[in-house]
Image (cartoon, rainbow, N blue to C red):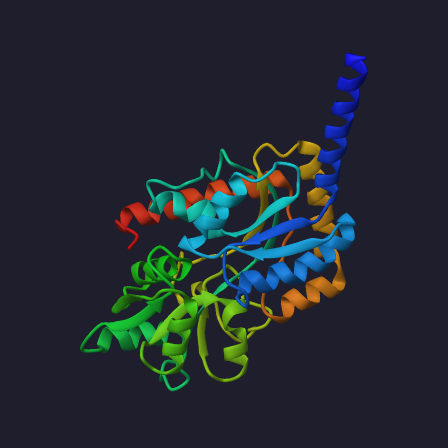
Length: 317
């Protein structure tokens, strides 16, 4: 009798576990609604749900440069029910900036797939006389004081790209950190600061609307939505490339079979023509990968950004 009761109990527990795994999938976003990461997440969630035959719910947990969301997912059930749509910051930059992170990017996560690549573009106010980034550098050197360039915060991709740009070009610039991208973009449009390095998805609407002028792309190739904007390398400013890619990771103990299932569903979702078109319309370039490729990307970018952060002695506020 005891064996029968125990067996029934185990079967009941297994059924509960299966129900949890087959219920809604929560896609955690580390930024507020309306931003580039959130937009990508919401485009992806709809099709991913169809591929998994499960509802995928987007949940925003903003704050602390993505660290709050990352710590939450690190402690979540490892059954595929909670996923983290992370940008490069939380997994490859924060470890070099913060001594006491509440999570470990390598130990606490199982990479699933890269989702999109996001090129960085240098923009200024349309009234700025510079014709391109090289001309901006030339004019900055002739200026009587350093030219103010804003960023979304110390240690952010816009800040780190600016540091690479200043080193490579020897531009006479001054870093002005803001708390987030929205206020600095507004101040560039209002001519309060002279420029900003930001993701194409977050800036393309302002560029197409004539509110910002692009001077250069910090990538190996030109961007399909900005074919006439030269890369910085084309302008003689070498070694300035930053890709604020987004990827999906799961809690570390997630079974390999579940990771593979999620990877295949993500590949299918990102291969959907309608999804790709929606992403490309606002500047994100679909770029699915294997879990191993994402792990290698996280590691290589961590080395790249750690080297820069240590060399420039960058410390968070």
